[in-house]
Length: 193
Ligand code: HEM
Image (cartoon, rainbow, N blue to C red; front, side, top):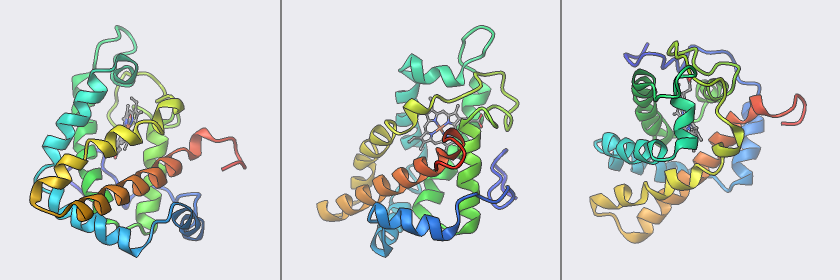
């Protein structure tokens, strides 16, 4: 088990999405073996930059009250530092997992868990946080743009060509779209996913 509290990759319930379903989702977003190679290259590029990336992403969420709201105390509306800090450690691991591109059954299962953790099904439980009970669905998909757009300068920092940087960015966009869709499962009416 990992040393990161609450990071339970490999020890969660099975995803309701089969690997065959996921293969068709990948096909739909044009995610192929080349994207896997771009993601793995991005892992080398990002490995020693994850804290700097997280500073940017947390700065973005922290500067927008409607987003920060999901990390606040339900009783007084103040940001919960411990909760933000605990989630941040798993977020750092998520950067590396996304870039490792080992999208097997264990990964699919953990994607479902991440979706549950944004939804009222499981939000707050991992960290025992006294926060709001749901990350509103309407913010999940739009956040893909700032997350991937702000990654570009970090991907460009290690001397790769413009075409290589573009390949990495596009693979990240595709991966994030796939993941956000998987995370949406608890928000979608039963039978409609
Ligand atoms: C591109 C969109 C998003 C990405 C990539 C993302 C990524 C993540 C990751 C990696 C985690 C930790 C998962 C784990 O426990 O291992 C997490 C948790 C969390 N995220 Fe997001 N997220 C996104 C959208 C949002 C939005 C829009 C909000 C609302 C402000 C949000 C609020 C949260 C909260 C509150 C948690 C903690 C959930 C819990 O209680 O366990 N996320 N997110």
